[in-house]
Length: 308
Image (cartoon, rainbow, N blue to C red; front, side, top):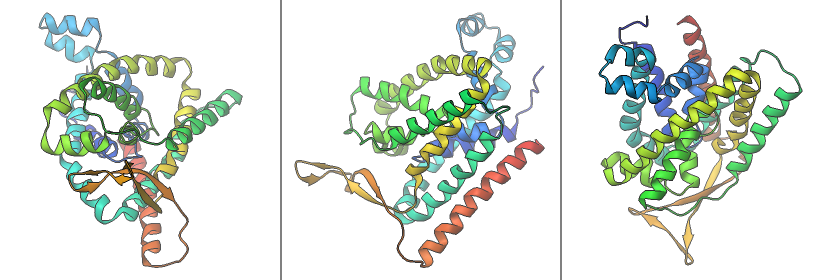
């Protein structure tokens, strides 16, 4: 029988996942994998099937909670929602004022994740290496795609929800970055969340809910039959996504009809031109320190998870 007490450690892991999903380039799935809750999370999501809804319909609350592992799932969901609602404005401010330092921190965070996720693979063989390489190639390919134009049509928002939630639960693939590629990051993750715009959030949430349940079945099946290859693929995703987080880059703004496109008085970023810093100054040194801080954060999360 699962512990009925509210597990605050799961709540904080959910908050970490939610914070990661707000940031373009960081995946909540990576945090779940590092903290050791990923496979159980996928299985819990997968359990929302016909049997679960029948138990709910018949008002068999205890059986429903046990069948869906609700004591495990609820603190994570509450933590995730809390982080998304509370951190959207903070990250908007930080990215506007300190972009190099924020990107540097998350670059270190994800860089260290490659090691800690990869080390959970029991055996490396040709199929594992192939899966790892495939993950790197897919992630790099996604990072060089140019973003679409913003679209607030309900059907497109519904599709965004499906695609974004799949990328959110896949370690290494950022739901926020995928929203950038789909053209709706500013619309959904910043504007709609900060202003609680239900016309935007409802179709997106419906797509996310359906995509989450369906894709969790696929992931659960892969983990049970090809665990090492699946983790190798996800490790490749994480490594390949590092180019998104490169701290030194310049924004290239979206241009339409030879003019920069603005949203709420701010130019919309189409993509970033990456470069190597040419001089060692205080900004460069601080960026290196933030990369180190990101690495140390993952080491701390890993050790805290092992103690738990």
